[in-house]
Length: 167
Image (cartoon, rainbow, N blue to C red; front, side, top):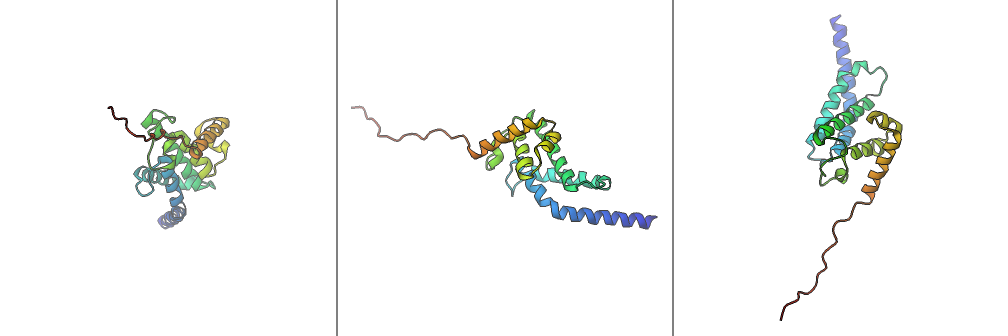
């Protein structure tokens, strides 16, 4: 009996290690996009990844044919949205993160952009995951994409001219 349990535990560990070897890089990149941190300085993204992988490992035996990547991505997204809710009092607000193309977007916009455009999650799936109507997800995605493609202009440059010297 113990040998069988040890064998199953070793098999589970090998399967999970193979999953992590293949999926961790992409999940870390998605988490980095969500947090709008720099790729080489991303402690919040690494924490999100660690929590997501730990949750996936804890439920590994209960996946029963489910895609572990999908499960890890779902946990990553819900964990990010909860953290943003607690940090900013909602998903619609947030401080801009400088140095990231997605940094100017609100957390909810980043989440939808990452799920829809980077991860390729269908609109209906993203809506179900976030508890929003599909039309709302589409609207937020379109608005965020427009902001990324056409960022607001900064203040107009000052026109240089000669100083007027009183005589």
